[in-house]
Image (cartoon, rainbow, N blue to C red; front, side):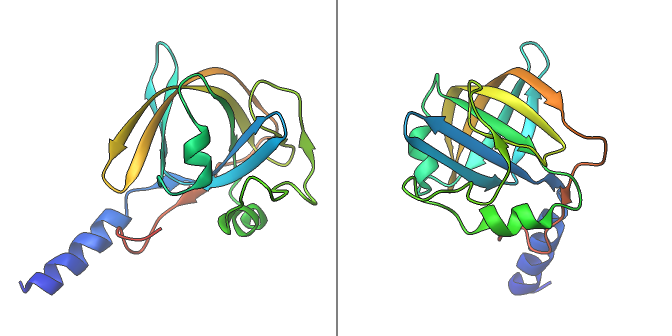
Length: 161
């Protein structure tokens, strides 16, 4: 097999690693923002923890220090409007939640009322992981907001989102 063909096959196979689609929200004082995240995985039962991969250049990556709270909004399989809204990215000076129904006041970021479920998380560690940083967060609370199926994301190419 030619090297170009081998890379094409690798990209296709790697892209078949399924992931969900989530909106990570953050609030601290006057700063409030959200991020479309696809590389999220439960990584511990006791204590319950998740891992989230974020590209270091994203503004929110600089806000997620150990001890920082955030909310992970789990999308339902038909919520493509949320992907379009949060997929473009936001600076901390932009209103990431304009036109969306949210609940505020919890320990992390805003809860998107249309979400399937939410997890309240607190960053416990951060590790460099290639071209992304891996954040490990303890899950301190959570609830179902609706009945349904979570959104699953399968990429055609494992070298691109």
